[in-house]
Image (cartoon, rainbow, N blue to C red):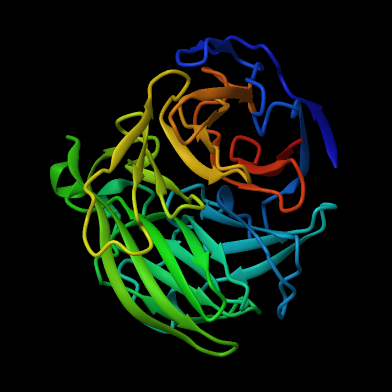
Amino acid sequence: MQWRTLAVGAAAGLLSLAGMSTGQSAPGSFVGPLHTVDTIASTVPANGDVNPYGVAVVPEDRGSLRQGSVLVSNFNAASNLQGTGTTIVQISPSGAVSTFARIDPAHLPGPCPGGVGLTTALVVLRSGWVVMGSLPTTDGTSATARAGCLIVLDSHGRARQTLAGYGINGPWDMTVRDGGDYVDLFVTNVLNGTLAGSPATVRKGTVLRLGAAVGDDTFQLRSVTRIGSGFAERTDPAALVVGPTGVGLGRDGTLYVADSVDNRITAIPHALTRPDSAGTGQVITTGGNLNTPLGLAVAPGGDILTVNAGDGNLVETTPSGTQIAVRTLDSSGTPPGAGALFGLAVRPGARAVYFVDDATNTLDILH
């Protein structure tokens, strides 16, 4: 692994709720003891895809999947056009890299309006299924963005079915409650009225819960429920589209959402069982060291971890809304770290966080 030291104490403003500067943390913080960043491996596969977005840790050995390895999706092709990436790489904790899947838009097993452009929406199930979001373009601009779909891959990286329609419209990020033979997928969508309203902000972003029965060779969609709605979304010349992004499920069934445009984290209660939309949910925290939060993960103790699009920082927030820690993950560029961070995941059994850095096209770890 390529070693580099985490920048601690860089100027990034104060945590307004905790009164802490970058690199500090409150007692009990999950990221409190973490001060070092290692680069594990490049995320660029043989075909040259770039712009890593989604991150998911493999829970069990299945087919080509290896327990503890990390899957990373690429949003851009080698041309660097957004919404054209077609690959998922698998990276071991020691840095061995292989291409898990290369999805051919011309040979999908079902409809996917617009084709393939792999987003941050990526989960790996214990049964070996991998579910991937696609928000495709033809030229890397929002003018050609289309609704896309969810693509269901088997444990060997082969596309077996697509989920299109059902309210899936620009799937941007995803998390899962994996019950073994039944799973609940939580998907954010960012294209509901966004293109028609461009460049203005519209408030039509949604969160869907998709229930599916799964087995070794079966994946059957059973239900779709819209549990969140009214999130702000807009086109963006640099980021393609900005809207509700990261989602993470708390132990009590609360779904946390990174509401990127409004620079806040909200909470949808009873996400596993609610029959209707909670709107944008309850505001947990806003402002402070949040700077357009994108990727989101829930730490083992229940705290919410988010990474910023506007700078290179990770912010830790308690479920009650107190921002208790901030760490600089990327300090390059002007402004430092802006636009570099997307997906993240807690490393199972360890006090560490995997994240992708698309400024360097790498999978890194904070530990």
